[in-house]
Image (cartoon, rainbow, N blue to C red):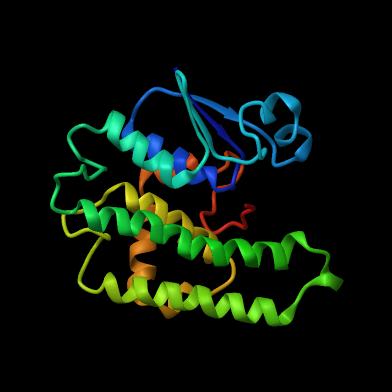
Length: 213
């Protein structure tokens, strides 16, 4: 049995989006973004840090979104429609973008902490400015790569677009992606995908709505 533990608008949205793209059966266990649930003894017995995502497949438990992406593609995508297996010519590039997604997301997560989680009187304008600039630099690299491309890989849409796409989705809270035309065009392709729309919280229709991590 395949299960995904998920909190709406959290990083687990990345895994949920990919599951919908794969079009496979799974059980979605959705929890409020609340320590009452994520730090409960029951959930801590599954994920020792009490975070999301967490994927359980029979006797396998994974709680790193990059590892979840790679595992799902290796197990459920034998034709390399979304994954790129070891012998595929794009395998190395696929891995690079899979992990680059976290390079973008780490700056977005820092900005979430500074702008949303930390009390206003404790926020650091210096950290906010620094992390915003780092996020912009990460998007600039992506913008240059996307010049003349619809998706990250020349062969077309793949699972790494869900990983990077979520990071852009989170980052769009804090920087204007309109400054990066290729990224903006790419992002709008992604948010119009049906699987992306299904991964959004049920009570949120605007893909640019604020998110939590």
